[in-house]
Amino acid sequence: MQSSVLRNQISSHFFFNTLNVIKASYHESTELGDRALDLLSQYYRSTTEAGDTYLVPLTKEIGLITSYLELYNLRAEKPFRILFNIEEYEYQVPYFSLQPLLENAIRYSGVNEMEEGYIQIDSTKEGDHYVLVFKDNGKGFNPSEIKSRSVGLRNVESRLRLLLGASMKIDSKVGEGTKITLLIPVDQEHHGGNVA
Image (cartoon, rainbow, N blue to C red):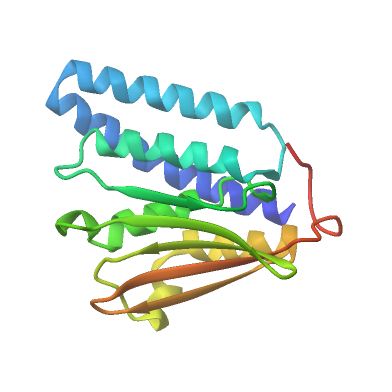
């Protein structure tokens, strides 16, 4: 129940942000607005198909954020660039868990203002954990301020703990970028919800 409430909070946040993207796209041109609506339709078709699923394959979650980034970049003055280094992908993650990490990087990292700015996702296996790293080389921030500024990150952390017994660590330094590390137990049989 608690996980479902947290997921709904994240989904609402995304939906209203996306409506703003579509509105801005129509200010540019009707074609751009139509393209944005098509992307939103495709995105929500995928999310609706998941139904009451709590856990999805990492590959599906990556597909969702890739679609979101394409939608966002329709109106970005300088498009955001995302890099993937996926060595390990055959495991589950909480549904809609990477979206808030991407949104946070878009809103705060400033990587699109840099000549070589990027957002990167790494996935490896180390011992009895899958290690999923979400990082950027942006402007960074003081991690002690995170509690007051990101409902999305707190929700991701709560859902990881509730559904998988996983943990999240945030490392960031002003001027050096941000690194968010998710440690997900390889043994996922003893934790939450329905699986896609």
